Image (cartoon, rainbow, N blue to C red; front, top):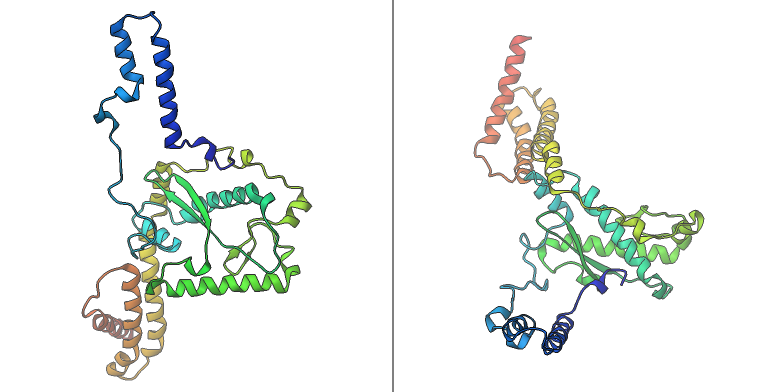
Length: 319
């Protein structure tokens, strides 16, 4: 009820209520207070049995995505991928996940914990992992869909591209679980927001006792936590993430090339200078195009070497 499930109405309940309304309507109109024409016309509105079949069409989705099958690149992004891809298109700002989505998610997690807190069993040396599902609609309104207990092995889809993410997840989960069991005293002073590895504290009983905190869902959600779509777009425009990212990638590539060139330019011949700098330019350029998502430009490495040598010769003449 705290999660709002009592607001929802099951289709079967809705149908039975409509039938009861129809019976009530027939009982009212059976009294000779209205003429026959208005009686028939009114009964056609309330009596479900007399409604035309065309008005009772059943809607069904054309496709149903159960989540059992994932297609990488279409149905699955990491938070970092989502932030990066959307910000590059100037749809969201460079801190949307941290400042908007994370803020709302933490409040929902806190509310869920307190709603079932009295029913939780304290078991020493055990843990339980929960999956929370959210959806962001076209207006960038975040909706909480539900949660369920899951096996850690099922937390990530079994695809080759996610093996590294899954291995890190399982390793850090085992670490925080074993550390908490072996040295629980080390975790006693952790407060809300503190982290151990990649895991953050969502609630601390010690902090609650010391600060005499009382959870109030009405206070937590007293205002709309969603950010207007127009504000998100304006923030994206102000951040100009795509251009800043492009400039940062270019600075990174040039930094490594220039650092290496500071050594290579002192070689006695052009061939030796070229041989010294070529691998660095080739390696950093491949990293650059991977981050930018652009195609490899033939001749870039050789052109960059010629530019560096030409600049050195020009500086020597000027000196």
